[in-house]
Length: 277
Image 1 (cartoon, rainbow, N blue to C red):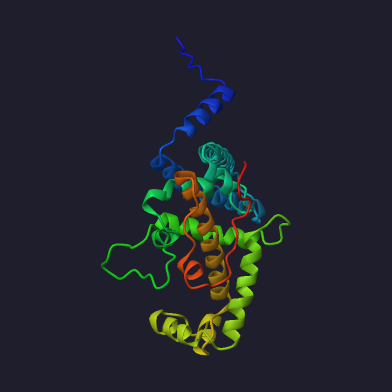
Image 2: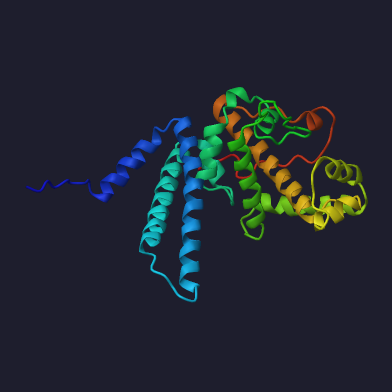
């Protein structure tokens, strides 16, 4: 006798997953965000493997790799849909997704990692994400930041860099301005001390362009770009913190000390605010 196992229709299964995503805990959401990026890496690796087999002098059969690629692609999409539902359940999540360069996975990751009740000031988020100035991890010490959130913030900076030419872009535009500022400082020799410090602290191959720049008292182009990406990410995080704060306390947080007390200018308004979405 053969036993037939009836599976729920795909439409119902997807609907059930969407309903479950609304009630995801922060811990579950963090797990799904990590899983999404791991599966994405597997999917890309399997695609590259298939491509290399197709282009080899003697193409080889790769049915199993094809299956793996399509399975990973489907699972990646399903997790993204679940995180879209999770992030859509809160106003800060919807605001984050209104920003060009921020999708449901990044929005969900930020919501799952950041507790506004433990971050009354945006500096708390910077420290938790490993973005505070002078923050270092000494050997033998506990890591002073959250590695997952730090990686997520790196992805944010990369994303803003990619969307800078989008007509609806906001933060990529400021990233470009910041990069010009960093390049100017570098060319004026204002980064000599930092270049010397990095050269002394890190093992950099003498035959690299990076070593050439550092040894001449300059930061290499990749370093300048990373600084601009980090600055744009911190700008976004300051706005995201304000939106989270408003959602929790129905008021915006105090202005940064340098602006509120010292009279520094340069305050950048929160885009899409007040948010009606």
